[in-house]
Image (cartoon, rainbow, N blue to C red; front, side):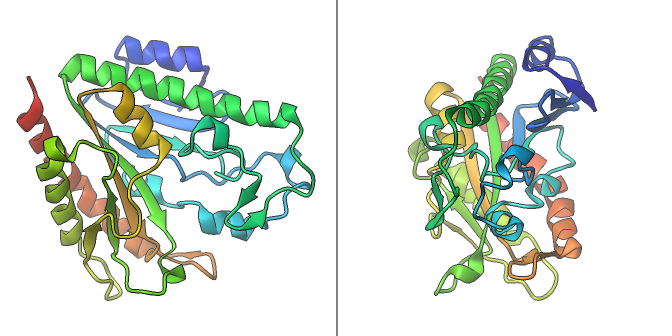
Length: 276
């Protein structure tokens, strides 16, 4: 793992170098073990929250953790291309447009004791912008090299806050070309439904049941790149105790080990279907 500037990361991508990097401000990581026509992302995996914001924040460390997506990076850690956020979405949210990425309120609660100084907002938004510069360079390279690309956009959600039965997996597809990619969406849903989990966790996977895929990461890539499919993939937080902040590593490992086999197979089928 190297600490690299945004310029250096982009240069390595353009030269098709193999590398593991953390951005020089420690806001995200990117590893490229091999250039393949698919990538994984975990934009809400991060929990860091810079110290200048601590005393001004009304939310506790637990409340921040509760709304983040812990372990989503580890679920796809074995795949050759993986980009992941290191910072909490309470500092800035990589899955929201820049204008809304720094929250004033978060999940119905005022976030700051006093309004953030403009200098602090600028610092956060620069991290957001740098992340998307790298995303742009990465997807540009993959489309240039392979003609098509598929991105597995990994998230999690708090299933216990729902008052009805919700699926273990949810795919959000409202902002992709479903006419073109509908078969790949359904095959991915079937893959997710096949994943066996310990502790009698149900094997259910639905499309647009709890979330519809309205995140900025998906929208950004889809709006710029004509031949890249982003699959917004949410797992219910069955892999932890939402209320006690306890991770169940046996569930995380079960997901990771099965995706290690199933995800590349799905990506290969996508590539064979859509390559020029």
